[in-house]
Image (cartoon, rainbow, N blue to C red):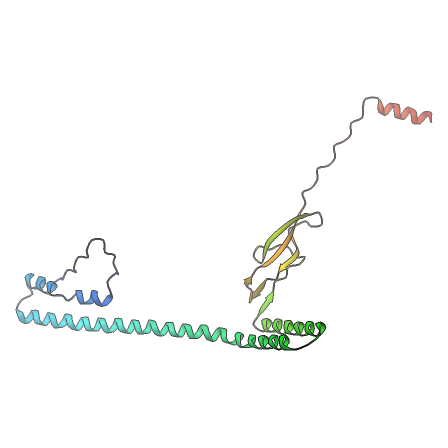
Length: 216
């Protein structure tokens, strides 16, 4: 015996109903009545079929609940992993923030303040290096669109290929992955100038010059 599924209303997209509703729809009274009309047999057979469908429905509902719980657990684990991944560098970065706060609160001369800022800059550079963050080499390097973002261009006779002549903002990579492209000014090779045209001399001018040279 084959129990035909209920026909989906016109215009309804598959998957709009909840899984639980679709499971329950498979065991509705109309399907059972259709099964009886097709010759399932006695009321006892019908009752047995009803019990089997109910048991199948319960198993499917439990399976759907397990899948939903697994999905929620994976979402929580993914969020915990993301938090754990970024927490270590953020804790290190808090030390840099502390030093900035101390520098701003301290009463010092301009030279001392500059020295403190330079110390914090070195600390931040070391922190980035520990997490495999490296600056992009830009100045005087060949322009690389994978690493550089050209924000200005100029022609130059001193270069034979597009070359970075000024770095406006540093770029950084992390384990060979680009974090931020460097903003640069690029010098482009100047177009080669056309050779000067040969000067044509009037007929006989050469002979007159030779004669004058001989007479001298």
